Length: 414
Image (cartoon, rainbow, N blue to C red; front, top):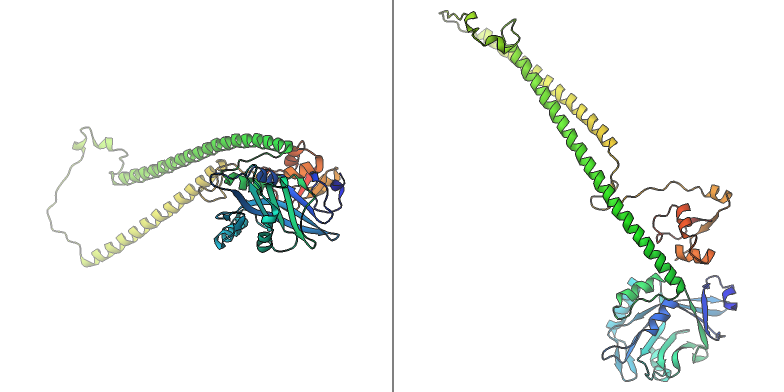
């Protein structure tokens, strides 16, 4: 229990001691890694499975603290009896996988997992350990070896020796979970009852998220339909106004050709043709050149005036149409993903209001600064020892996605 109150600043809180504490080095293995290594058995024609242990090292009062939160199997490893050979292609693929799956992690040693009853002795591999993993505090993990179920060896200033014991710690190790999913021969394992609670809670959140997505898509479709209908009605109204204007112009043109004191064409029909007497006068009348030029100028002036009136009418109609479009679009509810490109979003996103941290602190709430690599689940376990305040924290901080918080972000805690 003394480990739980160690003053080391980055020491995990949830720890299970395996064996005695080693006086030279402190070794901490994450629970997902421990479960993965225990279930990594040879398959087919394999005699053993070999991989890398990934993590980091911290020093406190001169004592090295080795944290392992990643384990990655190496491909194309050749085994010749009790010898393990790493080719250049094997190392190249291993470093690519580390960069993609385990960023910011370094190689802290290697592991060898044999089948049940296999005879894995550290004496057969310590020379290769010194060759491929030379350096201080490099680990060699053996599973199903001569020393028992599992054993861990390390190089130090005193030589190559077996650790007396190590610690298993628990955290939400998303990197290792994602890696285990990609490995089809190793099923994903929930490491503890706490992880089971987190899994159930996340499944409920996933169901609620799916329901919200369906509802948002329905609202999105209705909004688009309303917008299309509004545009169609607007287009029909504009066309009707244009047709009405054209009919008025046609009526005025027809009225201009009617005889004086005649308002309707009906007055010219119905047997009233006898009221008009058409006489033909013989003669030869031809327009002179002076009259022809004057008439031409008059016609040009009338044409220009008519074109100007037509242009003015078009501008007035355009302004009226723009005003109607703006008024209609303002009445249509804002569509989902308007601030995005076409096809980039199909769910309703509401912008949260500004959070007043000073008022929250004055009302007795705590302000918590998110550290590097922290998650909302881990903060709940760290602060309250459970997830009972998770939904209230999401409500206070207006969080729509439980898995999306950033390092340095401020959170209001009840």
